[in-house]
Image (cartoon, rainbow, N blue to C red):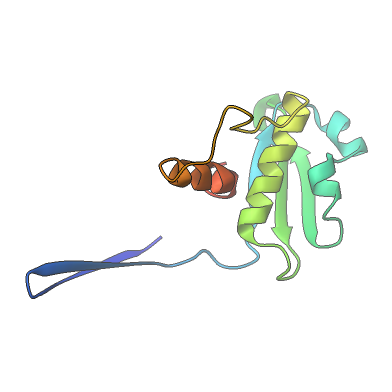
Length: 130
């Protein structure tokens, strides 16, 4: 990732422009699941099977017998990289724990003060390290 920063002082105000180069489209995302390949190969979890035909999913044994590597990439422009990352995270959660835990719930009341936190938790599974 290349980050370019430009700072300009105009009338005492400083502006900073940051541009980031996006990863190439159709890139393959890989996640390791702590389950044997035989268990996963029979039936893919619901998040991945729901996108059958729009993403390419490959399974292989992880090195040193540490589970299974699931890799996925988009076949067309209908699925974004963020969607694939979210699908992989939800699939790992289903395979390892049996449920997808979601932040928030009935105790979270929407307010202007927690709007940034709500936005971060809504989009948190789409970015970051797998």
